[in-house]
Structures are given as structure tokens and as C-alpha cells.
Length: 551
Image (cartoon, rainbow, N blue to C red):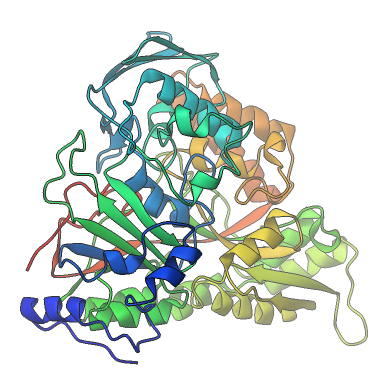
């Protein structure tokens, strides 16, 4: 494998122009145009763009998007590209405050039940058609119906009026404090009704992945699924983007260590990681920056999720025993070098709604054994109680398989045999857990800035949706928890919201449909040639308008 180290700005450009065709890290960019055209279904081949300009941002990721349309799919894989392809009504500042985007202004009624958006004039879709209020209304309804947690994003919305082409009136049954967050780039892409409104469902629309007609600052040039996505800048975008790269190349490299090495050697301009060893290692590399801010809006948690309908973990005493058996101190201070904070709640530590008075499950093997005995799981002659299967999201070995092996060893101490099942890739794992084919799974789940958006979706009874990743995959249902989440979502003030969320957290910490383990820290890692990297609250999952490539 051949790499070119970036030592100066001149060598940076040389590296970008002379990527080795023999390297099996990055797919060859000089390939048969006819063959690529067949693979891409008529899209222009990457070779038509890559290497033709130094004004290209190459972003490396291990996340494989199933689709590129955030209206029907959540997560890093979709939003990385989707927020470049589609504009949303608002953006969020570093302080998670709303800023104009497609909506240049808005006002909320005194009772909180109506929000009126005033759209910017002159905004167009990539096919040249104007973006109107009808498109915004259509997009909101699609997200509400078809997004994995659309009911959380827009559940209170009863109707959307469009009195003229530039005005959108959102009517709601109750106050919805998270509405503006729900209209930000990862959640409400404005999609063209004249393209996506012709079918009964948008979820399976072929233009979710190919021939995308978007509204954002970049057009889709090509999508070689599972390998590479090439985006071309929209030159007449309705917001200033003159300094933004002419091209964004999303290169998919499944192994994170290989991706990190490519970034270190200059093959990749920017990547994102939450793996402590990679963040530490690349922070010491000349010519690279590991950002010290960014992704504050995620509220990312690593947790152990339980399928509460699975026989051996259906009793909360078993789940509590597992919590007491896990050596969290080892996970935090040994495996992850003290660089990650422990998590004690389904709400992330840096959220204003986090309750820091919750009880913790510090390792106590005697408590674990008693709980298992009380639940009827006594030991046999060999000291075994039962066997349970553990799956994990395979994106990062350090944040998945290493934790799984630790849990396996920990649970053996209380007589539980753990059978670890690996998955070839994240889609394989996602299909298994979304269809309840698991007992326990390690997962990385995000709060998304507000509990309405990213927390309650995991626990609400009516969000048990087979086949939908990151819905209520535990199949947990508690009507008291539902009532508390709904009360908090419409609370008239912040004090009552916090008090209500505290009650919900206490129930969930006792019943443990999921066991929070660690608060994750995501950071962008990028070369010196990347200026104004997207280090906002959603990081790369925001439009690249002010980032530039220099040197």
C-alpha cells in the first residue's frame, strides 16, 4: 500500500494529484468509463471529477449509507451526504440556536401552537424548479410519516398551510419546544414534491440513492454504493458559498484504522472519530488537527441494549444484575484511557435535562449474584446460569468488539455465558437488531440535541417498529414513561420540563431496557489544507458553506 505524506502544502497537492492507481485503500479513480457508467446507472463516473481539481474536499468514513435522503433515514451515514444535497428550513448555531436557512425568518404564536415560516426568495432545486411552501409542507409530512422517529420530530403537527409560495404555517395540537431543532439539516431536508410526490411512499423511491434532485449546496455527481460518493458545488446557491470546495468526495473505508492511516498519510483530507486511541494518535501527527469542539448536538451514548422480549433478559432483575457485573471502571479508565465519561442516564451528561442524582451500577458481584438467584437463574454444577447472545455495531473495534469481549469476561464472573456474534458490516448488524434478532447489543445512539428528538424514540410504546433501526428496538413499553415523555415534550417552561424528564430517567434507570455505559466524544480530524472545518453542533452533518481548501 503506497501513501504520500503531506509535509508541505505543495506536497499536499502532489499527493492529491498522484494517488496511486495500485493502492487498494482508495478505489482506482482511473477506471473504465463504460463500466462505471453501467455500475452507476447512468451517473457520471468519479473519474470525470476526481483529480481534475485540487479544490476537492475528500472526506473519509466507514459508514455506508443505504440512502442519501435524510427524510427517510437517520444517522451519520445518510446525513453526511444528505445535508449537502438538501437544504432545511433552519440551521443551528454552535450554541444550538436557530439561524436562517431556507426560512429567512419565522414567528411563533403566543400559545406555541402555530409556527409561521417565511421562505427566502430565489431558492431553487437542482433541476432549476423553484422551492416553494408546497415543497416544505410535503417534506415535513414525509418526515413525519416515514422517518424512523418522524413521530417524535413532528408528532404534534396537525396540518401545514401554504397561503402563498413563500409562507408556511405549521399548526400543532400542543406546544412543541423541539420544533426548530426538528427543522434543522439532519432532520428536515426540503425535497421536491414534483419528484418525490408521485409515489405512494418516498421510502423506496429510486431517487433517494441515485439521480437525486436536491435543494442543498451540492449536487450528486455519482454514487458508487458502498464505495464513493462525488458531489459538485451548486454555483448559484441562494446562500454565499464562494469559498466552499468545488467538489466533495466521500470515500468509504470500512476499517477505521485503515481510514486513520489514510488520513495520516494524506490520502484523506478529513474524517470523524469517537475512538480515543485514534483521536490521541492523530493529535500528535504534524499537519493534522483534531478539533477540540464540535458535535455538541449529538449527545452520543454507548449503551448495552436489551431485547426485553428475549427470554433470558426479560426480567429487569437480570438486566440489573448484568449492570452490576460489568466493570465500567475498566472500560473507562483502562480500555479507553480515561478519555470518556461514564454514562448513567439515557440522557447524555451535557444535556440540560440530565439528572446527575441518578443511582449508579458500580460493579458489585454479590448484588449481581443475588439478583440472578432471585430471578430464578441459579448456577449448575459448572457454575453456569444461562447463555445470552451479544451483538455489536462493527464500525469501530475499540468501541464495539473490545467492549463486547470485556462484557463477556465480566458476566462469566456471575455465571452468565456470553456468545458474541459479529456482523460483516453495519447494515447487517442493523438488520438483525431492528428485526429483534438479538438478546443484547452494543450500540451508539444519539440524543440529537433534545430528548423529544433523540431520547423518547427509544422508549415510546408506539415506536416499536419492526425493521426500523434506532426506533424502540428493545420492544420496551411502559405507559407511565410514555405519559412523562409526552408531558415533558409540551411543558410550558424549562423548569417543569427538567422535573418531568427526571422522573422518566429514574424509571428507565431502574427498569433498564438499555444500560448506558459511556458518553461519546466525536471530533473532526483534518489536514492543514482544510480551513474552517465544519466543527458545529452536528459537525459534517451540516451544509459545507464556509469550509474551504487552501494551499
